[in-house]
View 1 (tube, helix red, strand yellow):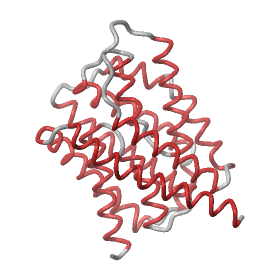
View 2: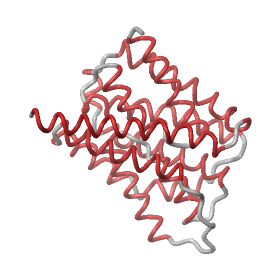
View 3: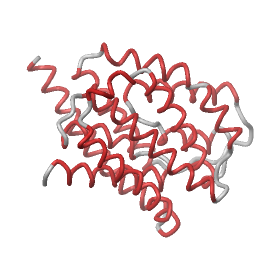
Length: 251
């Protein structure tokens, strides 16, 4: 397939996951940009932040229309990640490519495990300190690796803050949008270095996929979608781990 077709297909998959599950798709964006479209790890994380911010905002709008967003709670949760997201967005420029690839392989594996793990009983009380810690961690991860962190935000909202699953997906999109936008501000100067002939179609397909993902979530069981995306993420994690090891050895 041509790079343009690959960009359209990969973008659609990213959007579908974000729209349907509130996370997971952004973890696929970076490896797709690196291995399918030839971006460097640093370029891929920057481009991913742009795509994730725009796509999450689109998906957030779709969920907000159905009243499935806890705005005040999501704002507080996201606020804890603002400073870490900005700081990590600057730090990642100084990290070697093999280290970034290896870190991303680990995050992809964690994301897959999170999707496959059975939901825990909902917490009976809200733990603000723990919630703030999770929010800060998600922000740092977003800035450093260009991922939204929805695969961790959704379980945290359900298990730590006792948010129903339907509202957790929508609220996680608010957190992802905030973190990705803040992290992207630290890299605005890098946007001119990206190949917009590929980023444009990738982002457009992701935006359309986000709307389709919202509709898909209403027709297909969430566990089925989670298992499908988890299988893809495990394959991506294994591939990237091998690639990181090869790069480290060859220097």
